[in-house]
Length: 152
Image 1 (cartoon, rainbow, N blue to C red):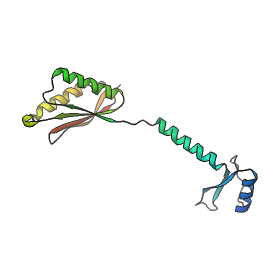
Image 2 (spheres, rainbow, N blue to C red):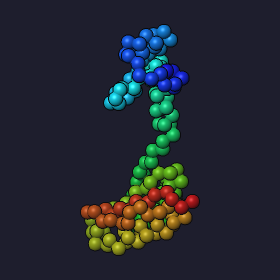
Image 3 (tube, rainbow, N blue to C red):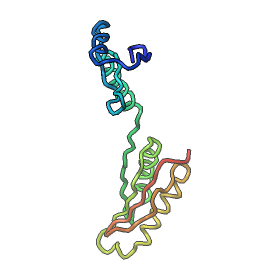
Image 4 (cartoon, one colour):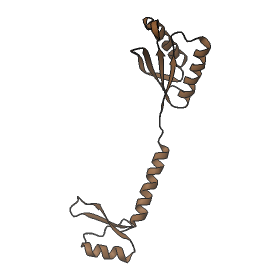
């Protein structure tokens, strides 16, 4: 194939190289496994540059979703709860997923029901802009739940 995309047909390798040199271009093997192998006359440096630009554009357009974590305690007071809830809302509006953790210390581990109540309250307060990605799970002294931005 030539630089305009037109098919030249089956050529001898030397003839193809001569044609490429006449035009000041390179002979690049495009499909080596084909029978016969397909080669194209092109400016290889320019081709590599364009590929690199396409990769950069694709990288710019991709969004990275981060996981933010907010920790509560079973005895978290109302004002502290509201402050942490504002952080959760900010994270979700920013497009990030949020991990909500209730941490139990000492004898608090006996009252896991209080931790479930805290997590249920968070779900209820964020139901307009978030969906529960994973239900509350108890692991050792922590109880975690994942919220994902969803409903808008």
